[in-house]
Length: 212
Image 1 (cartoon, rainbow, N blue to C red):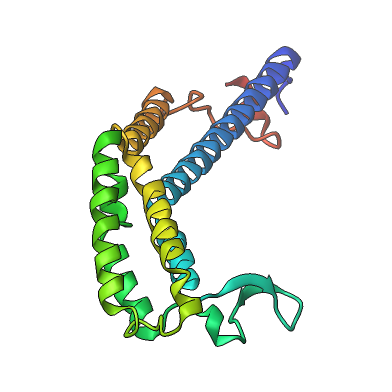
Image 2: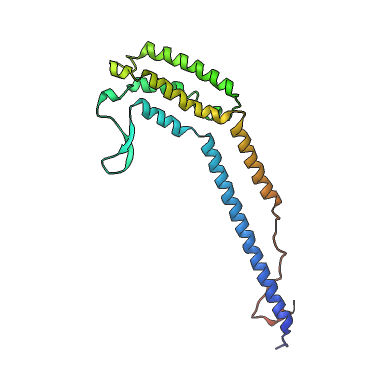
């Protein structure tokens, strides 16, 4: 068996250890970048999705409210008193058909001035007033108590639509999405393709490999 050069042996071990640490750093960096990309993707999706808002409006038109269910969980409760249900199935469908044209991704990803948003909401409010007044009995508002909710229906609808439009003031949502994309791309471009040089395979059981 050849004599072992102790200094070279220790040096080889140190190089192997550095190489392993470098690979660990590279793996951690890749995992972090992947997690960051997923987080940013989820945030962007949340910013442009309006499904939750539409669902809340639909429950509102049906008179449903959040409360404790029979099994103890929290959920939407259907009122037992029919007078608490402002719109029937036709009324709910008619309102959602209109509202869904305003509460969508195209609205969020557009560019609006604050004044233009006020103009759109004013026009929509006027049209909704005329529409409901012309069809209130057909839409389910068939008694005086339900008719007292008329103004509340209009105001609540407009306020919730406004929250969607405000995401588009000055193209704010598009700007934030582009900024996130630039940061993600810069992170990937700036990261070297290889953190450590390729090391010669080292086998501690083979003394011949100690000499490098």
